[in-house]
Amino acid sequence: MSESNKRQFGSMGQSSLRERTLDLPAARRMLPLVKAIVRDIVDCTEKITKLTPIEERLERYRKNLNWQQRQERYQLQDELSKAKGELKKAVSELKELGLALVDEDKVCVAFPTRINGRPAVFTWQPGEENVQFWSYEGEEMRRPISTEVSAK
Image (tube, rainbow, N blue to C red; front, side, top):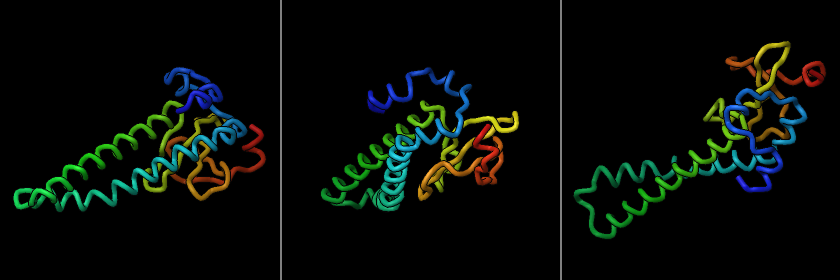
């Protein structure tokens, strides 16, 4: 996370962020940074998905590879390792903001809040213009944010 982003969202410790709840305007203000982090997650996931079958094939035939194929295998292992490290870093950046990745396939991000006195989350995923859905903590169903929810 860049220094300007740390200043914008504060440098609170991770434990205090977990206890923190966000109102809808705060979640929406965080969205540009969250979109950038999610873009990194999507890019890394796509790269890992693309390279893994190639790496598995090269690993399966590793004893019969010529020198050039062995170099390709080592380079591929390095690329995969780097992509996995970048993915882990991006997910950690979400956690540092007090957010969670609730659906890895859809890359759905949860912003902790309270609705009707109960723990809940606002959710956003790629392709959505803004934070427009919510659910109670632990639920899978995403509900559209209504005016009465956004006012609380």
